[in-house]
Length: 138
Image (cartoon, rainbow, N blue to C red):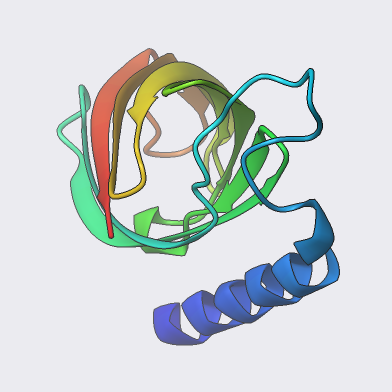
């Protein structure tokens, strides 16, 4: 079932990327800030303060300096944020059975993204507060 969810998520991300491909890239115009192109599929690992850890695919879509990601390999959830140069600020939205969110920052380049997050999740078996670190590589 996880594989089916990951495949559906990947297909959705590819469709979004195809429809929005004219907006992908590192600049919106001559006065916009520089941002690294992070669109595509990444291999991710994470650990958190609640004893959780894992790895899996992370599918990132990007329009200008804004990005969103689907994280099926981490138990679901989504991320959205902004890139400014080689730094990013983001919000992680937890998925069922947990609800809540975490905010974080990351250092970004074309082959590696690493960062941390802090927030809270509620629901059966969920951890509050929660903090963690992650690394994405291509």
